[in-house]
Length: 69
Image (cartoon, rainbow, N blue to C red):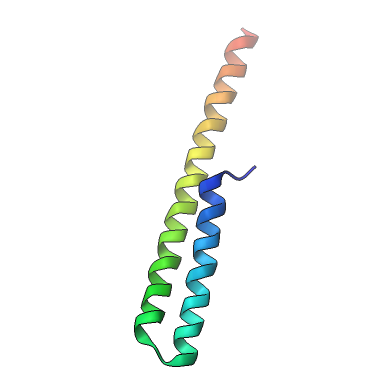
């Protein structure tokens, strides 16, 4: 199940894409640039959340394996 960072990261990516499209439509380079930055930050946050989730799953798996012994 996705964690909060993954979900917020995905939302930031969408926000960034919307800003880029708005910048393209209005010929506003600053808005387009902000959108690119938002999208990149969203990808980074989603990747961080995914890594955090995988570490947690690994720790849980190790704990389950240790209980079996």
